[in-house]
Structures are given as C-alpha cells and as structure tokens.
Image (cartoon, rainbow, N blue to C red; front, side, top):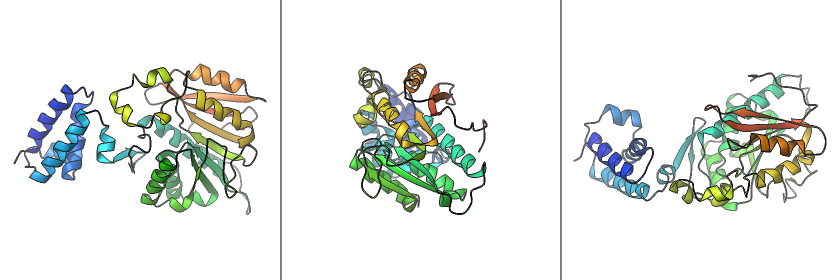
Length: 316
C-alpha cells in the first residue's frame, strides 16, 4: 500500500502540472478527505499506509481537481468563520474575505444590544442577508449570536432569488442547529416577498442589511481561474462595471433600512470610489465608509444615513 507522503508528493506534482496554484494544499485536503483525517495528522504520519479504498477515493478527487473542479465541491464542504459548510454547485463557495462581513455584523448587533437600555417589549433587531447563497453569512451570524446568548433579541431573514441556493442554505442551517433562528425567503434582492415575510420596499425596516452580491465585471468573469467556471455565474457576474446588482440594492435602501439602520456590503478591491459615488447619489444624506480586509484591500462598504450614531471602532 502507498504511504501518505508518497501519495501527497505524486498528487502535488500532478496538480501543479494541471495548473493549480495551491497544488500541495489541494493534495493535502483531498487526501485528508479520502482517509478521514485533517492535514496536521497527515503531515505527522507521512509514512502511514493508505488503504486501497481511500487511495481510490483520493485518485478520483485528483482527477476532478485536474479538470479544474474546486476542492470545496469535491470534498462537499468549506470551512468558514470556524464552521464547516456543505457546498455544491447550487451556491457560491464561501471566501475567507467574507468573514470580515460576518465579524462586522456581529460587532454591530452586539453594540446595538448593549449600547442603550432595551426595555421589555422593545422590538427585536431585524437583520437580512440578501443573496444568501449557501447561507454562510446568515448561519455564521446566527450561530455566533446564539453562543453569545443574543439571538432572543434578533431576527434573521435570508433571501435569495435561487430556490436551489435556499435549499442549500437551509441544509446548512439545520446542520448547525440554527434553522429555527432564520427565515428563508425566495426573493429578488429586497423585492417580491411573501405575505408572511413582506420585503417589498417600505414593507420592512431592517436594522442591518448584509449582502455579498456579485461584484465581478462581466468581462472579467471568463478570465477567472477555471475553478470559478464550476460556480453559479449569477453569483459572480456583477454586470458591466461589477456594481449592477449592488446598485439595485442601494436604490432600495432608503425604504428598506430603518432610520438608524446600517448596510454592510462586500465589494471588489477596486470599487471603493465607485460605491462611494453611488451612495452619494441616493436621496437624502448618506455616508459610506469602506473597510479593508486582512490583506489591506478595500472590501466592505458600510452604508448608513449621515445622522446615525457612530459605533466606536472595535466595539463588540
């Protein structure tokens, strides 16, 4: 039987030849998936033999990865915000940079709940995740707020125009025990809600609007690495300038946001000036602050009315 190290070395060479920019990591993840162990265990036991069944599973995974399929789809899961999410072609694979959006949302909810007294009968904070996809944002936030014992004061609505994506999001919510904390509604952005969950402009005043909508310019989508071709194009293609879908959401904010509400929108690294200009064009007085990700790239637009109270930096 081949050893762990032998399979890793040969797999890495094959994936590198196929064009993978993360060949060693891909090989480790695929072998770990095949044998049911994490990467640390593999590295620590490089001479351990790998059974025929696991080796065959690994081989099938390598073939799929050589064809360009994302490792996350092959394994059927992706780690995000400390949780493991089921992923497949129904939804976009969660990216590490989107964790900033969840962290800011968590901080915003916590600040709103503790910054002022909340007498009995105070309405729950209303949070909406627009274009939820796999549910990574809504589920991560719900799971985190539950740990912090804040969920009783928060309602979370997850919207998507794709029924298939909503099914995937529900599966992830069930897997993490928060299905009863999130309502899932098929809707185009903030329009087209049901009678039970009206989300038409003017029909709901959300305290927090979260969105990781498609923001890649159409002309750039086909130039993405081949792995992206396995993901839903609608979850990537942001129109000619990358801001077509986000722009449609911005137009709805004056009606959809509560007077003291905040929207947190993920954007492309070069879209800061464009999003600021789009916000400035909204009726009324609005502010837009663009926050950087861990790599220092502009990544998250914080949009709210200029009269909103300012949350202290780092407040949790």
